[in-house]
Length: 233
Image 1 (tube, rainbow, N blue to C red):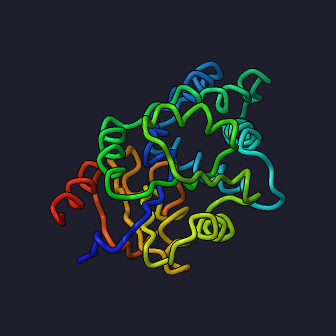
Image 2: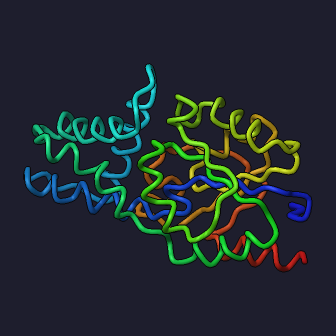
């Protein structure tokens, strides 16, 4: 059983964990695919997205806005259409409209009573700035791929976070939906992890690459995590 009382800082992945990125991705990509007459199941869309995003994040660093535009171009290559410039911009521009899961804000407010809160996210600073007010809590630290110049599962972004936070690694608990992006690299650095296994059109992976690991705790949502913390008090 994970001792939740030993942690001082909770670090969170953002998109997929705090923010409903599947709904956001569908809202941006479905109209593009429909405009080009390319029907695709939700499962297949998320699987293709996960592959294209991972490909775009490898190699020389490029801002997340460009990663997302590359994803749209990738759908075109794979499905046989050429997206317009406006369509390529649609996905990154939609990020500002992506909303928190219903459990996110109440859980963060409750967890803030006990822990410092931080975000470690594969995003640009300017894009996260459109999301931060929706979380309704004051974050102690925000570490982005734009700052680290690498994307999770790259370890450098986690190392930057540990340096910034400045507490022993045993007092940091990382909370995330993606096993591939978060649970595996965090555990490799000795960071305890909570896997938020949210319901998804692609169970167990969502819009991330499929992967397997052994998190220290698995919950269905952040309400369950908050209740587990309160139970220990």
